[in-house]
Image (cartoon, rainbow, N blue to C red; front, top):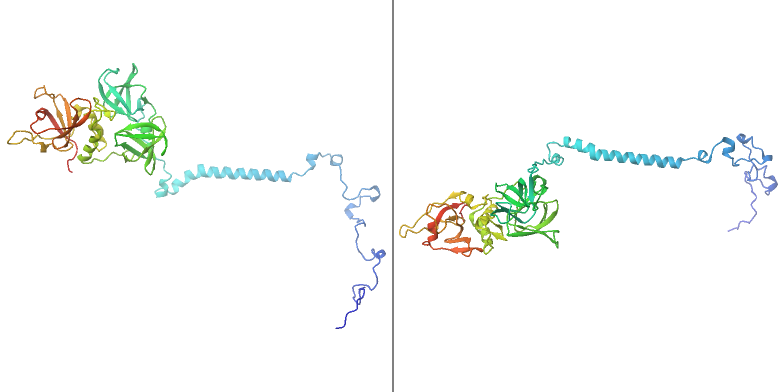
Length: 417
């Protein structure tokens, strides 16, 4: 291949390039603009090169126009930031108004009559204890005395979180109260408070009735410390239910946790359902060997009528607290006798029947109750011990003289096994 001769390219035969060497002296004729060549624009005609006032020279704005630095500086960035801030605040106010004012008033009407609409309906709270004389008990059990004196007769007891109504003034540290079931007497005035929120049914989700002898209320669901111990038939209200525990409201606004075993759950205004007599007897047997206390209601001190009261309530029957009232409650059982021996037929007394006896030295027509026995099996009764210190089981044959002292037999539970 023929090699192309290396020549200095001067334009060759190109019609656009003159075939002669470039001469710097001809730069003006070639129309090439150089930096050092000053350009004169029409609107800069007033600039005088001879005075040095070239285009682009900084002017003193104050001397020329009377403007300060702040007046002569553009603040476009600040204005944009201010506009952005105002826009953000406006959006926030709009969203806040829509969420908390507009939507709550509009959506309930839109979804009225539907399942979604129920979510917007505020629950109606019917307060049960609006009367300012109501109080709630703050101790596990409190004695109700016949007089404002610790040496007077014990009428009954009230339990933790039980509502009572104050009916008199404080005397010697005692105050006259009345229970929901009509028992009147005196209790220590420092064993109750006026805050009734712990017993208002409509403020809570669950109603719990303690069915064990006692239950511990703890500060936490697990590994907590003891707040208090509540006794059988204590009523508490809860708002949280977890596996094995409830969070309960306590008098004074505090909250605690209680295990789900040994408690009966109902709706806040619900009642415990009535069960057959064997469950009633099972609850009574928990008090075997418990310390006896006249008109006591707890494992720390219990009477037979007190055991009947709490055991019947946790099994669905409302019983009065006193022996005299209990003797007039329920169905009276007809006593049957053996035709040959003339002794009582023990089969006529069923499990759960309550037998009221007069004293051994009283006449046949006497109606004053001396002792009470609850039938737990044929011929077996839960009664006060012969020493009078505990409750225990006592068994009698049909010819025992105790059956000659029967005042009445009452049946409050169905005896179907």
